[in-house]
Length: 233
Image (cartoon, rainbow, N blue to C red; front, top):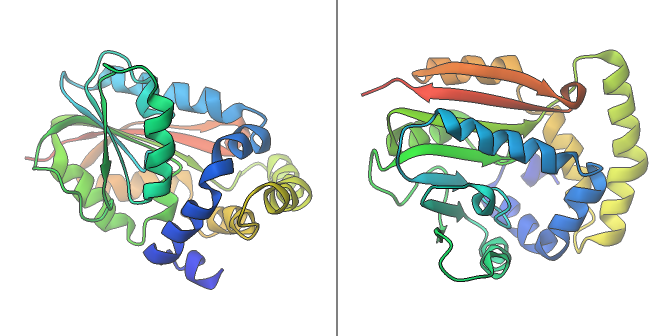
């Protein structure tokens, strides 16, 4: 657990490999299907991106990549077990999604090759946030859009109290029961507690040269959507 909280890449990769077979069902169950609505909002943010390819980074089992319409999409993740499931879900041939094994801190793509980058529940696991956002800006075109969907600590006291109770009574025990790695769902609330809040995330993006277009709470602040435009180059 300590290695995971420290965002050790090997520990995080191994954790996701273990939970991959039950990842989708647990996401739906533990969020009461709110994750489906949140992802739709993330995909909609790409409407502000210029024409061009899109990268779904930390794609996991590919839900976001497969939901992006009218774009050539690359879904990238550093956990091969997740990518196997994403490819299986892709279904019919001809859908414009390709899959790539990639570490967010050392992306194997040329500079300026994507018009948009989206990340759902991934930046919280970056070993180095600044380095990750730096790599993303490298592969974005000038004026490209970055959309970040992430879990956060709710600021409202009532929501925070309900969230803590939900994590203790539902998330951790159900995750332990259903997944192959019960400790992964103890890591989930712990990783949220040690992650910068929404306002701090926006500050980090501005410091990296992004213009923040939107920073909004979702479901009372349990999650947040941040949309930024890369203003460099």
